[in-house]
Image (cartoon, rainbow, N blue to C red; front, side, top):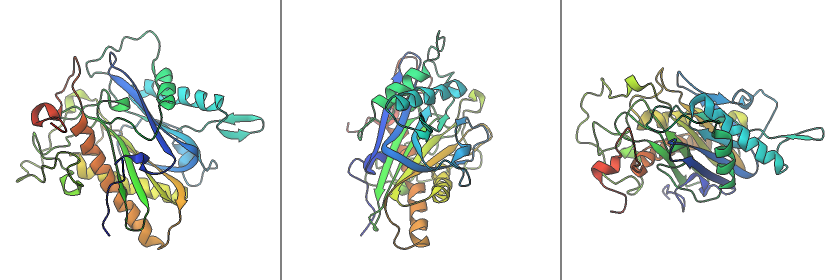
Length: 335
């Protein structure tokens, strides 16, 4: 039995997970929220030199709170962290949250990308991110759009628009692994100017064009970047239905960082805030101990690499874009 994508090839192929997007086309920004039917165990790993995040410290294995209510990926740099407040307020109104006496405090870790100089109108009178966060949560469901939606709306890479990507895999053990990512990298997802993706060795079917690997890899020691823009960061989530505790989720997030390095060149730079959350819905026990843990980690990395390529592949043009889309040069999906 070989590994295959889940039915949707989205992180929501893991039962119980829901993802919602909300975006503002004029600002060129947005928010993506992952929630679930019930609180879930989560961990995090940060490798970029310029991260922006909220509530990540409590995800450490030695911290008290065991589960979280939602995870938020947002544009807006530090201003976008307010998206988590919109999500937390909506969850509290719905009766969700960590119980403290008679009160409920939703636990909503978040991470942001820098998309403030991408061609959109950022001259807002009021921070738009709390409302975008609440709207993304309200839109959450098993199906969602990738490409230029949600937190990927205003994302860019060194040579093409970035975006929101997702992928999943069903392992021979029956466990499922999925990835969700916002690609706003300093580096590039393609070799040279494309069409070949760095993630090509891990592609399943023709999920990002089926172009295969590049015939040659010129100048790999001098990578193409958008260094002058200082508008970077790739943030993501990996998820599994395997039973993992906070330490196991932290290890899964750590392994998934390899997916960034396989799909983006360069990755984990001083100007990127590369961060990966990991979560477990704890629906399916591990049967083979460390062997299953190893397989899950590898699947998390390859799913993340595939999701990154799918984000760039699916990006769509919009007025006043600062970057072309991959599809502008190499064709629209299904065309």
